[in-house]
Image (cartoon, rainbow, N blue to C red; front, side, top):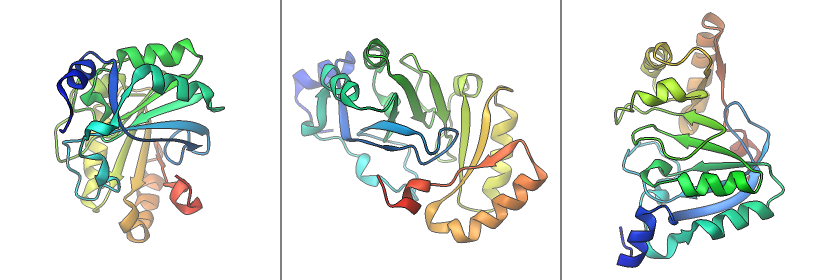
Length: 212
């Protein structure tokens, strides 16, 4: 991490957050797929998924540090009612002040997380996407509104079923083919869901539409 001391202190207090990019688009994945949303993609991730399609978000640089006030003002200018905080891994940072600010301007705060750090912030929707590479915390099985498991190998389907057994009964269950393997994986997911109808498929529709 390449930041100055004053920025580090403000980041630790949740007053600033490293942001790789932000943009308004349509949510492409999961329960809210097709819904307009403003995305805040935090910088920094130490989970290390080898198939990650945003590896440029793993590193944090000094020029990515932004004040929460500035982030909230940007979100307020967006016509989207939903703000999705994703990463990277956003829970590397204290998100209490950010979510309070989003709610103060009438935005619905959605989180996308691997669940490896303790929850901060007050959220209207939590998309919990656990990864094999690092054990998630139990609290996310209890609090997640949505379980989204990325499927890269056939064996991931059984792992997904193991994850679902730990989830709270209200959670929505999604299987998402890893993009580079989608032609091979989608038929496997379709067959699995036919036999396990509590699941739904999540396609990265933003990639099909060639939008952010």
